[in-house]
Image (cartoon, rainbow, N blue to C red; front, side, top):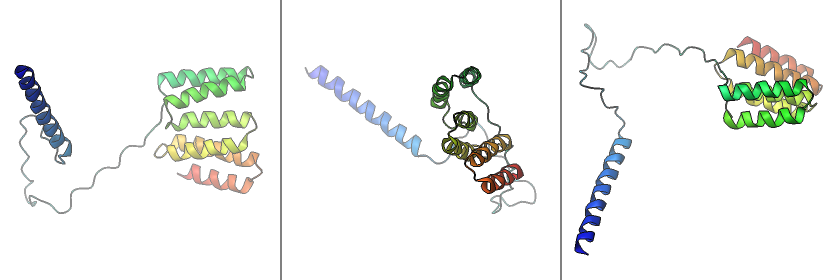
Length: 171
């Protein structure tokens, strides 16, 4: 019995130490240096701790793509639409959204389907969601803007549609 007790105490102590070490690493705000790297000396004529770091280059424009699984589902949905099976296409796009809920291209596809179903209000919601998710991707923003404008026109809101087109194509 004493041997089991000692083993449990040793195990508990080891787990406590491991948890503490993991917590220390997780709370560290300073990245650990890779390998045995030595910091570079400051450039000649500059102070070691420059108050104004050099400006970072702007990140390249983002471009959204569909994963292979989502792309397959979108292709299936388009085929179903062409055969007139809007319900099947809708459930197929719902599956695609479960895979990539933050991909504006899937929302654009769903919005186009909602327009085909004559549900302009749902299409508008999909267009707005796609536009919000398309930040930094000009191509997706333009597609989302066209969807939103088409949905607004289908509701008779032509002036808003014109304004959305103006905004989404000027980005």
